[in-house]
Length: 604
Image (cartoon, rainbow, N blue to C red):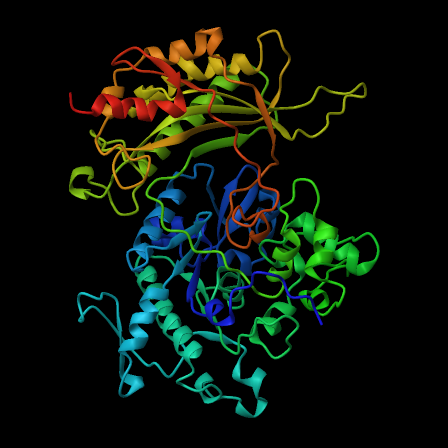
């Protein structure tokens, strides 16, 4: 009998939630198709650097695929339409707008994004309410979208499950081929009813998204792990519900959860990253694994299925802790992996955030070793950063003031900004290449080095983005760069990153909210930048942290997921940055500046 991890939630609590996972189909390509509907039906690929980051299904039908070289794509499909996707602004804007739409239809407000193209919704509260409203002929039911307006909603048949299901009727009982799923499940089974209502809400939301020009693949289950995985069974533009019986008792065979997860290679399970899956394969194989992660099918034969792990009597959470654990790993990593391969995921869907915790822009380079090229790169990154700030940190709820289309990313005509939050810190990071060896070779660079300074508040003005970017580069970023790389040093960069962090919320109920718009106090400040970059006593500490090249998360990049990545790096400590108050002239650490400003706001 397999060991049972400690601190399990009761079975009834593990099955009380209804979670929807939305994965927008070919998201980058769909954004361009929504802008220009004439592209629909044509082979379309989105380019970053010299590779395809995504392509639509017409292009895939002709042999194109993700991470393919542009030259190879043109050879296979000469009539492919290639559009540049280097600037992520429009993708981010659309993703934010779609998430805002979905959040508006979930009473709990729990809407969590993963990358640009994936979103979880916790619709448990809505399902609870609508289950209570079921009565009479279930084939003529009404789904209530608003508790305060009984007329707002849609009609549905509560005896059927729209879209696809797992397991299918044929899987469960071959004699029932051609029957609908409710023929093998009691209509009044509580979990079946709840998941069925969730599937109807998913179908309704998918139809609304399609009206906006976007299709989505949706998974419906009781937790984030299962909803994400089950949705991938039927792509594109479809939905799949993982139906009962659910049995989270470890080692059980007669469970839809076990039957579903058993067919997955261990590396496909979110939360089990590359390092962990590699150790698990070697343990099961008893030798070095030749498994290579990628989008192509594994040809090494060294893949290990979840079933192999689940049925191994030696694979207890304690033994997993010994195998995986060690310095730098959580103390309960063995139990967590044991839970994941059994479909257990008690993590909550996070509430939708009003503002991001940081805004970060970066790019990688084959060669970047001259000041002229560096300035050009910094200006390009700064333009993208300012655009992002004006999208993510500005209140755009009053469209008559901003005159913006729902999916517009052009804010150049806006003359006044209502800032939801103001960053307190700006950070410049670089990744220098190691010096060449005697034979001229150069090792791959992994380490970033960073410098931070107080946020230059002139970026909050409504001046032109290009002008602000040039001023940011000349007044601050070049000086920070020379702190990282003295002028007499030899440098060649493979990556440059600019980020604004340490957000100070202007209004709301969060603990950082100021309650009043203090941006007017900060706008005239110009001396902060000079003081932060010229005073040697205020140098922030030089820090390094590991990183590797990443392509922004998109469809099917589950192994690169930031939500479940066991190798994610942690941002530097910002506490060494210094702020200067223009009201009283006091200097203080950045983390204390918010409290200081609140002091000035108190009545005399």
